[in-house]
Structure formats: C-alpha cells, structure tokens
Image 1 (spheres, rainbow, N blue to C red):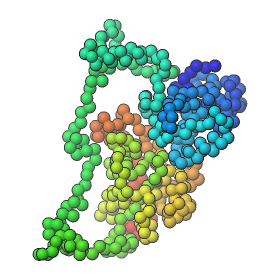
Image 2: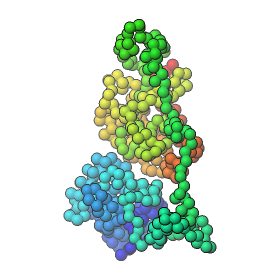
Image 3: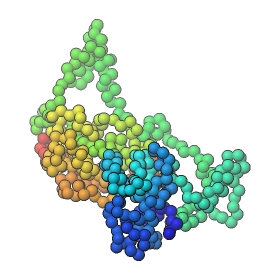
Length: 442
C-alpha cells in the first residue's frame, strides 16, 4: 500500500492538470478499466501522477474539520468538495445529503462549511502554501529545528550562520522543487514591517466621490442649485425647504434627445461562485483591475445594495452615462426592466427566478448576457447552450504574491494589464447592444 500523503498527491496532480479518477479496484494496473463517476460505487482514487497508484477513499487526510466536532476529513470528502467547488453552498449540501443516502455507515461524506471549503480550494490550487485546517506532515525535516531557532530569536540568542551555504537552497518535496531560505535570512524577513504610501494610509485604496455631499450642503447653506433648487426662505428651516422640494418620478427612456435621460441598469449575479460581485465590480469596471471578491484588503468589506459607475459611450452621447449596479431586483418597479442593459451570470438559472424574463432564452433576447470566467477553466455547460446570446470574457488567475495587498497600486495595474483589455471589450459590447436597441441613441 502506498504511503504517499493524499493531500499532497491530489495537489500535485491538479497542478500538472492530471486529476485523479474514481475507481472500484485497488490495483493500479486495472484502475483505468474500472473507473466510475459515482462516489457511491467507487472504493479508491486512482492517481496517474507521479506514478500510478490507488488510495482508498476512506483514508484520513491532514485536513481537519472543526464543525461540529474536530475530525480528520477522509479522502472521499476532500475529493467530493473539490469536484463540487464551482457550485453554490446549497447545491453542495444537497449533493452531499443525496450521496450520504447511498453510502453505508462509516463512509458518509463530511459536509465542510463555507470557510473550510474556501481554505481547501485555495490550498489545492496552489494559491496558498499553508492553512490552519491542514496539519503539517509528521516527521518533516527541520520542523522541530525551526521551532527551536524561532525560540532562540525571540530570546535574543540570534541565529547562527551555516558556513558554506548560500542564502537559498532547493529541496524536492512531494515531487516539486521547493526553495528553502537560509535560517538567518528568514529571521530578517520575519522582522520586516510592511510600509504604505500616503495614498493607502490617508486616502485608502479606492478614490471616494464626495460630490453628493456638496449638492446636499447647498440646500442647508441657502444657495440655489442647478435648475432652480429651492433655498430656505427667512423664517423657514432647511429641513422644511427640503420637504417642500418636489421629487420628480423616474421616467422611462425616450428617444427624444430633449427629454430627461434615465440611468441604465446592470444586473450582477448574486452567486457566491461569481468572480464579479458588489464587493469588486466597481474596481473592475472603473479602474480596469480585477481583485478577488472576498479579498480581505482589496475588496469592499461592506457590500452595498447599489453602486454607480460613470462611463462615456461616444457612439451614443457625449454626455457620460451613470450606470446603476445591483445584484437583486427586489426593489424594482415594472418600468425599471426597460433600463436593464446587461446581466452578469455564472450559468445558474436560479438567478433569473425573480426576473421579468425567467427563461434564459427569453431574457437574453431582451438583455445582453455577460459571463466572466477565469482563464484556463472550462466553460459552464449552460453557458455553452445559450450560444452567442451571452458574451464570454476571461480574466487572468489571481496571484497573491504578484498582485496582492503588498504590491503598489501602479504595479498591480501594470501586471494585470490584460484586465483593462477585457473591461474595454466588455464596455464595447454594452455600448453596441444599447446602440442596437435605439432607445439610448443621441
């Protein structure tokens, strides 16, 4: 029986695009002929890389789940979570419950919570080299020594220099070449403190538009704004002046250039698997830089219900359009649907249940469909079935070390220059679609 670590074996196989296969035999020579797609029928997981071998699905791994109790998660649950990585939480739970009904006692699927799934996917994809849920390999060389040296550093003893060695060396770990930093150099790295420029310290990572504050202040300062905004008369409070101001109702878009133009609406997907959500869509459409929607430093931690993006569409009007971004039509009035110009989707039809057009074919006859996926990943089957009704776009895979919070904003924009190309192409599609409708022309 192989003593290979199941987690490392799975991670290395995915890194070289040779994922394992479910099989009903423990013999590697017969595994290919006995492969299956059913987790209930399979008994082993067949790995072809780096050498053919079969591991039992009941084998425990180093991944530890703490909900509701602390246990080592078996290989079947780990591989099942990987296969279900692109589905929603509710679909994942439903699939796990259905599979557990077919499995005998003692082989049930461990239902990982959302945070545990994210940590597992991040580690398996190679985006992170450590996780609080993954125990280190027992007996790994240098583990106790590194802990002892760390204690000496904390106590002021320092770290001795190993004579005859360079700053870095390489070792073979799990079939991969890993760079090992010299202990003294690593101690220096550990003592470093990240610095920030005045833009990130004083102004944050995103520019803030305070024009609405100026417009609101004009009412209290007694000034007459544009188009005859009322001011407070002598003896009348500012609050009464505001209350006396009539609120014009929203009007549908007219072809007459002299009529007031309503703001076009872009619908986002509320799915947790969507690459673009309310937390990162503004930086993508405004600045042309993609950041992960759940990034702790670069994405918005307070998800708003509505956002605004200003964009000039030269073929339609010299005056910039203000686009409204929402991920739910809960506050929609019936006439708002005539202002929807694009719908972002991940291929999940449950997104359209509360839409005016619930069927995808009918929806994308009236509205432009937009799908944004990660480069190198296969396209969802539903998206393929919708054909040219949905425009497909791709973004480069996120690399935290090259694009993360420790990287200067200008450097991040330069390294992700392909995002700008994708955004410009996306805006051209929206502009052409609005132009073809005729209601948004000059």
